[in-house]
Length: 172
Length: 161
Image 1 (cartoon, rainbow over the protein chains, first blue to last red):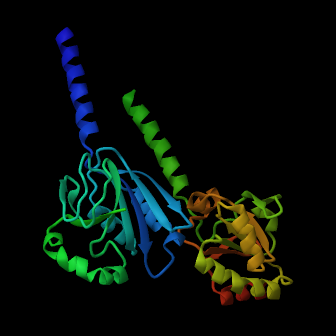
Image 2 (image 1 turned 135 degrees about the vertical axis):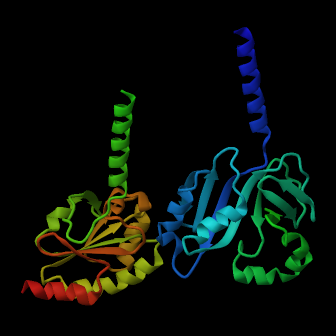
Image 3 (image 1 turned 135 degrees about the horizontal axis):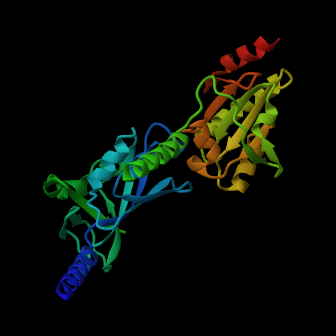
């Protein structure tokens, strides 16, 4: 009996450590949607995001036209999954800012960080560690206009971003 | 025992879902909802019954709604003497912005507020999925059209005579 108790405590402790250590997932995503019609005037995006099993809550900021998606702990959401979810409603991503804890990573330009949610390549240096906010710069994650504007940057990292689930990110 | 429990749970869930996703259909009656107007008076939607009623869901931050408002203001003026009533229901969460919009758009018809965005009870009850959304009721309080054109409204007004 004692043994079983000890075992379960050990397992629980292990699970706890494992879960708190998994600072790899995206905890929050701030999304601006664009389209032919007013994105905030439709309940579709809100509903679609809320219907995702990994989503804890969705709130909207009407001043910045931003949907803030809070994700559950230990989720396996990738930026692509979020993008596809929004696109299902007939809108596009105008901007996606992720909050994620990369742990003790010192952010530097050209640095590649591999995480279960994707491979991230930084385009800038930053002194921040722990939970950081990053904007995804890939095609389809910014407006067409902004994407064109960043042609030079995109060309520089083209080889890397051609890989699946690989994201060019800017620490902000 | 377990089975009957499960059954009851399923029923409860079903009723929750059917009310949550319930939305007004053509032929349904004008619901009785009480909301505050822009003079802080509680108004029952059914108190308008007897006239042709257009229930118009909007918000101050919704650009297409504001465009529609500017069209509706003179339209209402033209037909208000002919048993026609417009009731605006705003889902604004900021009352100041709501009031400013009413003034700016020169809206003279009834203005109610349900300050909870798409989660507003009235919006859920009507099944509002986008803004603006409007619902046309005839003099018996029966829903005859969703997002009617001006022509449809005029036709219904002319029918009374």
